[in-house]
Image (tube, helix red, strand yellow):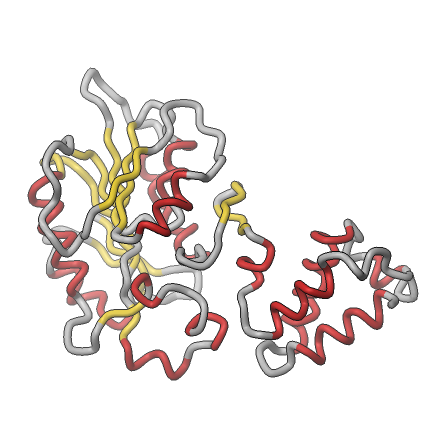
Length: 279
């Protein structure tokens, strides 16, 4: 099979799931990952024969055709310049969450760390992408991450991100319950909690609905702020008086979430949507 034939096959097989341009981009990702053939070869040598079609390439395409997300098929995703393991059981990190981490880094870079430990808490940590990225950016900080999912925590603990200081500490906890005992006071609390309303499922793709963990995505329509009220309780109990809060939000509920955190600001993402609460 030539490069042209493979790309055309990808576009055809993935047509029920992805627009043609996105399916073509996925084909290039598969080729680069499984055969080391760079995407530009499709332009310069479209009739190049692909070696090793009996290996992982065609099974990967068949996997994608079922709706399984590309990141799960590859087993990783890129986030904030690091490679993170992802698979079923943990949410695939989104670009908006990279923006959230970038805002924290921009705000806190150059912060003087005194004799007291500088502690960061990532609530609803999932794959641990936020916790590990912040640990890499702030090697003098002690970063903690918690989640209710054993599967997600198992993935978070096995990430291999190079950090200059201590690795993040992950623990099992239900954010909707009271904080467990023994935690320190925190200088920063960050969270990307579930915030998509159940009624929004109708506009979402099957590769999200059928494969990513619903508990990491959705909240009831009649109680969309349940996690933010819980985060406010954790902040009241654990955040230092001069500490900071950073959260990702549903664009529909910016003012309502901000009201739970007096003195906070609503910030927009790169697409101009209300996406973050910062205090």
